[in-house]
Length: 420
Image: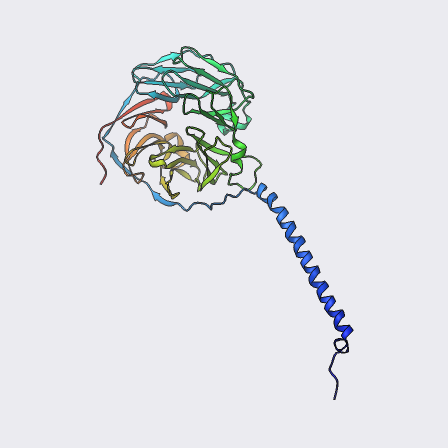
């Protein structure tokens, strides 16, 4: 009979050699695995630094098509006030007393609810223009400046190409009778300014700044926010808009064209929490997205498009439970305010064909919803005005609006009848 026993395995020394060989192989495999795991773990921080994908996934929004009715919202009375200028910014720190700036670097004041306007003396240097105004009382306010852009920069909104300014901030404590220039440590490019108290304010353009001493000193808080940006590579940190709050709280919407990350801070920008990621308008936007505070601590985002694909607007709502509702319209929404009882006022424009080719045929409008954004009635509709651009509320029954060609409107509310 043939012997099938392996002579190496039958030899005790042969067994020992094979066992040692197997142990050495297992040890080698373990060493290689450990080294590979170390290399992977070492590479993770680099990956996190380069790819700033937020922890929450993109919020799944409930899509709602707003219904625009042809009926008129009769509980709002609209009055056209005098036109002192081609109005650009408007603010009423209290009922009856307001300020408006124009595109010729002039500032006007009313003390009788817009019946008449008086020019406020403020010397704007050559090569600069007023970008925004902010008043926390009839006496105390600020005016921010930005370099006068070329026509190309203005048409393409290339804010990062504007030369930075210093001084860029003027302050008054006596209702515009006298002004003090605020010299900051570094020149800045500022598009918007928002003071929430007499001491605390926010300013933003290409960066985001915060102050707690009436604007004498500003802290750049953008770097901490950049870690929340929902785009893949952080070569820069684009953002849409800022909603300043009191005592260091703020809400910022970062962006990468198609998505927006909603960042919230309560320690003056040192640390940011990512609350939501939103799908924004897939065709771009007409103006920087505006962030508005709704009732019950909810957030609203106003965005629109007027691209070749069509014209339309969106109101995106984030509730306290982080639920997202996206109200879509066949009109462009430039601004909105949110009043008690689920009432919304929205301004903007529409065109008969809803195409960008008919942009010059657009009609300025103000809309009203009494059910939180589903059904809408016309408050104002004017073919002679191409757009209504800004809404500003003094009380829940009094709202101001500015449009093209220097139009200034006062809206007064009677008791509304709810839509059935």
